[in-house]
Amino acid sequence: MRTLTLIGVAALAALCVAPAGQASENTVLGTGLGAAIGGLFGSQIGHGGGQLAATGLGVAVGGLIGNGIGHQMDAEPYYPQTRYVAAERAPVFVYTPYAPTYVAPPSPPPIYIDEDNGTYCREYSQTVRIGGRARESYGTACLQPDGSWRIVE
Image (cartoon, rainbow, N blue to C red; front, side, top):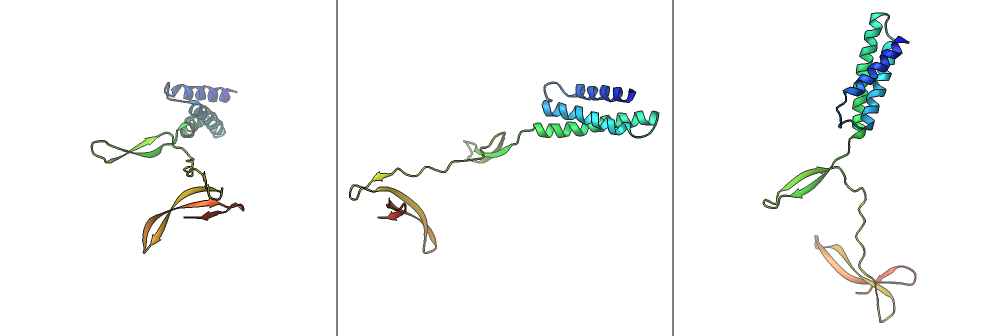
């Protein structure tokens, strides 16, 4: 019973050591659970004064390990973003806590109705290689009754 009381007091002491305003839920919980589990493991080692020392060491080491794990769980991921300094036009890398995981593809150009045959058409652009050099190709394609697109220009 005395060992469990010592473990509880040591775990509470480990929680009180956390800096005010800097520790969040996972850090505090990790510190407390780590200290309690470390104290339980330490209490199983040795007899008498050696057992008390092992319990105290288990509380300290367990609290430190739990604190580190909880702190990493609380940490926000940072993603690099490139920003440019206006005067020098040199890139400056700034880390921000959020980066979108999905970017929608650009919307296709608007569809219009071809007045000659009443089909839906749209303009397109495509990169093609001509003579080993990349060039932009432009044209118009119209929707066919079977759902395919046919190039008309």
